[in-house]
Length: 117
Picture 1 (cartoon, helix red, strand yellow):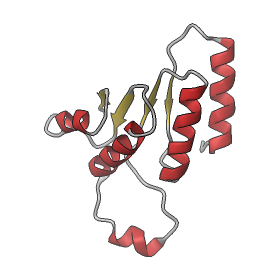
Picture 2 (cartoon, helix red, strand yellow):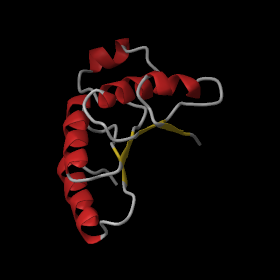
Picture 3 (cartoon, helix red, strand yellow):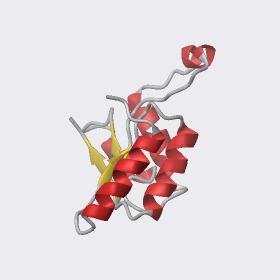
Picture 4 (cartoon, rainbow, N blue to C red):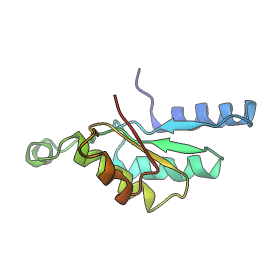
């Protein structure tokens, strides 16, 4: 199931309204552009979401750009985490592509914690 930005806003707002006492983390789907993820993150912080989780991929409709993009999930996770940390103050879980050998780098890119498989 793929959720768009408006779906996530609606679901998040409804859960926050109906269960204000719970800690709520929202995953920002990679299917959204980085611009949409940043806008959504700001909105989610505004409505009281407690933390965000990244996904390690990128949605770019430019096929030529995608072919030249030599980034793996780890790099994309860090790029998204860093960008998010510049626009929100709530905790960010850096997730996707992180492991024992590279998880420590996430903190320097704005992550509050790391999610691993």
